[in-house]
Length: 454
Ligand code: ADP
Ligand code: MG
Image (cartoon, rainbow, N blue to C red; front, side, top):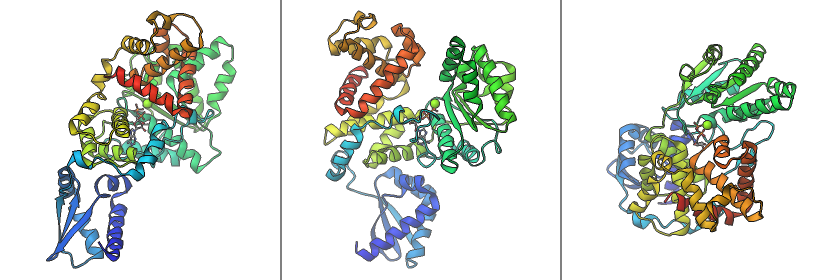
């Protein structure tokens, strides 16, 4: 391609990008390559049949229009699949990004320690890195509207949907965006689990006044996973009063839950009707297009671009939970960091382990067994009160892995290990902090994790 054509092609791609938006562009158009031109027809190459089919079905006219604007002599386009596309061959990724990749990948993703302790917001959750698709576009629009006009557009906003579809991401994005627009606004995000814990502690410590002030002096209160209130009567009552106070002051309240208000068991009627009093919107599991866009975005964030076909394998296998999708992608990337090549079968094998069913089968018992084998200690030592440095640290690893793999609540982990949930939170956070500064520890935990999910 000569320089002139290269600039023209860039213009065409930019044109498409403006038309379809950044995230769709990343998924379908970023790798379009002109192949040859003859008799008014431009042949364009893409990386897989899957992309070809999608482009032909949905975007052919957009591409043609963008091309015609720059090159009016072109009358039509023909999309073909690049012949270089043998998954076993292309997967030797570029050396230049490899170093960057190692660096980025070995540092864990931003952890809870980057969370602002006053707002509980993590800067990693933003609107601009949230991929919008059919499954979440309404929730996305509602959240954006609320961020622009807190307390005025939809109050309260109630978002519900199954686990791993982006509820926390969106709720946090509202907080981050509000602060970006107005750095003086007072935002507080809290999980319902934490809200309840803090409430109980406030009762115990006779510090109810502080607790009340903390949640009433805000402009936006974001309460995540309110299904957790089920059966917790005193916490429900406190929330009811907090809600009324804020609502009457025209302050914004946002809730999330794994189901609609009506279906949360053991919740007082008056609270249910508050939940339903504003706008209630669901998020559904993402369609294939959204899943592909998310995979691309996440791997770009880690500084690596994989072959089209690999994204497709992952996106086809993992359909319901974006956290699992990210987990599978990380595992594939991790494998890459150690091996130059990877077969299709190997990818399938890695990815399979990230589906929900697979994880559900892993019991805390198994996690305990494997970590003890790994460090050559007796299982009962885990439950004893012995405080040798070694044992204390292994217990912390265990807590971390229980949380990461089984996604158990702090309270359930506490019950299993017969410890207070504050100890569990402390231990988990301690390990997250350590991993950030010690890549070798991250490696070690990844190794144990791979033994566990084997
Ligand atoms: P939920 O709260 O519904 O269980 P999360 O918000 O925790 O789900 O999402 C799980 C993971 O998937 C997070 O890392 C989040 O950043 C990511 N995620 C979910 N939806 C999207 C999306 N549409 N675009 C980008 N990342 C997403
Ligand atoms: Mg969540």
